[in-house]
Length: 66
Image (cartoon, rainbow, N blue to C red):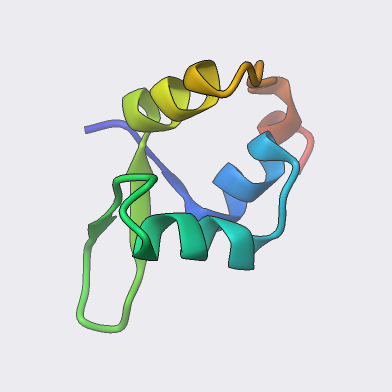
């Protein structure tokens, strides 16, 4: 499973981490929890589907500069 963090998703979507968390909590953006302390990860395929359905082009090179 290839995943990104909430922070990475926020960077790619150009929104805040709180916005990504709200999208996850509402079920709009599927995510998985890896631990009981709320670490969430988003599968790249789900993030790409979410972005594509909203006409957003993801620039993966944004993650390389962090």
